[in-house]
Amino acid sequence: MIKNILLILALAFIFSTSHAEQGSQSHESIGEAVKEYIAQNINLPGEYEVILIPLDSRLNLPQCAEPLEVFKTTSLIKAGRMTIGVRCNTEKKWSIFTSAVIKTYQVVVVLSQTVQRGAIVTRQHLAIEKREVSNLREDFVTEIEQVENKQATRQLDAGTIISLRSLVEPKLIKRGDKVVITTTKPDFSIRMSGVAMTDGIKGQLISVKNQTSGRIINATVVEPGLVAVKY
Image 1 (cartoon, rainbow, N blue to C red):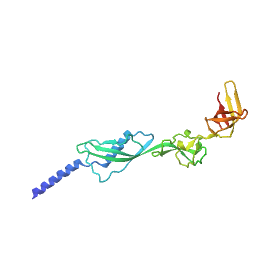
Image 2 (image 1 turned 90 degrees about the vertical axis):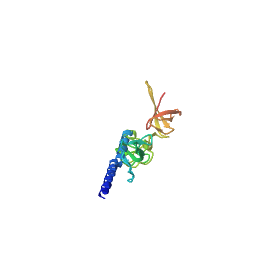
Image 3 (image 1 turned 135 degrees about the horizontal axis):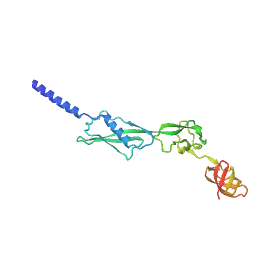
Image 4 (image 1 turned 135 degrees about the vertical axis):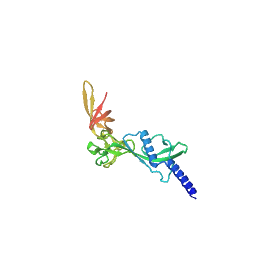
């Protein structure tokens, strides 16, 4: 009887030792492998943060005797939610898919105060802050000089991250404005009075009526009230 008990205990010990040696692949080790893979393969500007979606607590995978192989299911690692694969290529093979959320942060231009539609944005309206840009289009602005003195196409609230599509070059000249037409050559310059026939932004070619001759000519907008003709 005693011998049988000892035999049972010995077998139980061997089984438990074997099981302990084999063990289970910890979810933490899988997560670390995924994070390391993302760090080695990500190519995004600015800073980023990786948030792993926890695996099902009931998931029990054999301990892999070799380093885990991590692979992506898309061609690029980008901001947003991604599916990342992890597999073990030993005799006891297994493969799973994990989910990770990648958030990206950049220094961007934001509004420090509300700007009404049609208003000109000046340096006093603008500030530089680090913000999450994961879900933004790629036309957000990173330098104040890109948007300074441009015109808002809609109301922009304080705290808004500035995008190029929300601003336009202001109209320096409007149809019906009285303008000065200048013509400059190496040996002389002429200044004439005219009337703008169309609106225009800086550098734009517009139609202008010469008030002296009545002729309609094309001239380039230089600044409010001033256009230039090249010959």
